Length: 120
Image (tube, rainbow, N blue to C red):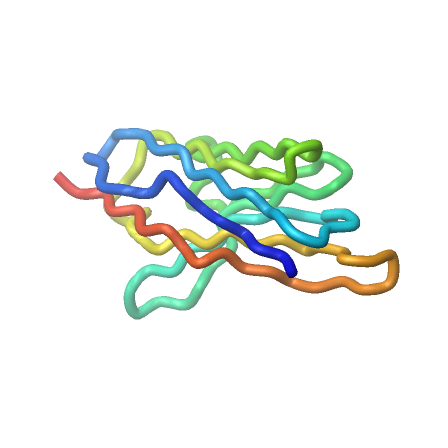
């Protein structure tokens, strides 16, 4: 009923930039928060950035000042602008959304993931 579709991953050199995008579609009543997570090989999935419905944002310490999360509430989209990329940013990036499909039903939804590789 709800789909999250990411785009924008790829290969970039250290110091470069990439923008990830995620679009939510389907039976959506409202979206409480949209986030980006990442998972590197052999590591646990970690929260990168979150944008809440009230407009507040939070970032992992490792990306603060380099990444910017932006949300378009009218279009149900979220993007992640990533600058000054480092090899340690290499991971599969997943979009996550806390979505109400009715006023009484709330669920946690994930995109399929997009690979970001930072390498020279």
